[in-house]
Image 1 (cartoon, rainbow, N blue to C red):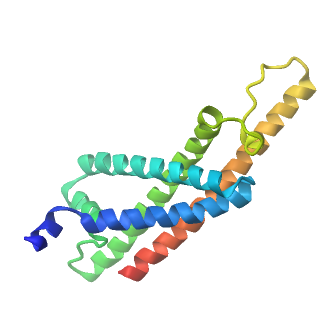
Image 2: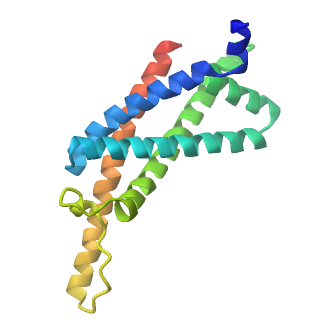
Image 3: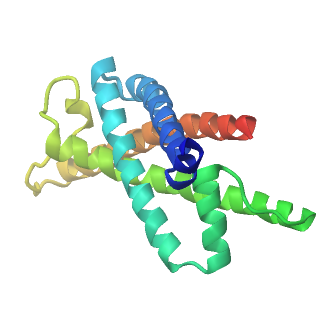
Length: 188
């Protein structure tokens, strides 16, 4: 009975996803704290929110991709997500599986980066209360000024602010993704 339950429910995938989420949140919160100059508590809250959001979007993408792919690729994708391995009948398939692994992993990393970058901007500008701690990260909603010097300064500030946010999210994602990929390869 218990052996059959493991075949039906992807408990291993759920537990592994939870552990990876906790690891990602811990790593990314440290990076966000250092690069964005915010407190540990705020960095952990932002990291948890962004990681849960990107995980949710990632699973939505998985179900959409799973629904539109061919049968062979669908089987490969499901076996990789739930069981961390591909179906490989011969040596050529092993090379093909390695290509699948890197393609899927690259897609996941880019998706996480995009979702977390958009999520951080949305979180800072719409949900966060403008305290002194995060005021330097929030875009100013001031009306457009007629003076060109101030308008240029606002554009420069926006570009600089976006670069800081991108750098923080990129390095946070990069460091956690490298660790997660290393863990997945070691576990196999």
